[in-house]
Image (cartoon, rainbow, N blue to C red; front, side, top):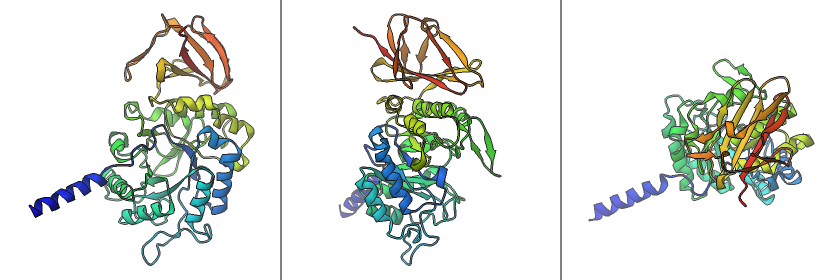
Length: 403
């Protein structure tokens, strides 16, 4: 009987820890990450300035709440107890001071590490120290862990992420777990069990349609990332998201391209993680990033990822089912010239086989809302007529007009 009791306790302990934090990321996470703009050049004053910008620029009120420090925050070596140590020159007051400041601004704090023995920038990784590192993060008050995939020779991806998932859960703190293994091992097939979001691609770069080589890997622009993966939309949903990488809005593309970028990440139900320098962001960039009507599409409670309804010629049309029988549309001008749109709703049946939802414009009238210009455009009784600038988007929300 005693042996049975011991085995039962062991089984309970294993099953208790073999899960991820619940009730986290029920909609796509929103926040900011340091990597796209700052790389490893980060410090405590930058973190505090960015936290202040969240509040001062209305980003917190728009829904952004995670401030995530990427690679380079730690010293090059662990201490005598094998604990990670914040870089003393970058964080002279320690990480707890920084985390407390971020929390004091009504935000959540995220941190970075790697499943390998070294991070991508050569700092200490978590391989062999998963439970020790997770405990330290919880003690600091960390709310989000981005977990990278460099220097992971001979590791099994699913197993490595499971180990850190269990370590995070064992702390008792609800920490969002962001899987960043670049889509190499089909994380969408096993990610829901392991984490709350997973990268589906390598690193993004601030261009519309390009590929930049770095020897053994390449950075991809906005459209190559969107087009890279096929048949993965069925894996995303509340608590488990396909992550198309941090955004490059405000990092050098045109204002129109930024609007498309933001619209498409919202349509795809991707986490909305900013990657620009908020301290110097233009007014136009902030207007795009704080557009609550576009954000509402991303945060829709159904969590259904958009699909490409039509990509013939210079115009791509993406559609996304929303709750209450509503729909989001993104008409994207892929060309270098302005184009005119004359779209007859009844002639273009829309049915999403994944969600089994159908736009019934033949017998239901929908009111049309222009989400970037914040104006109503009539109903689906008449053709949609508009012109769209080069690399720009007409983003719409269709609402059944029920009297």
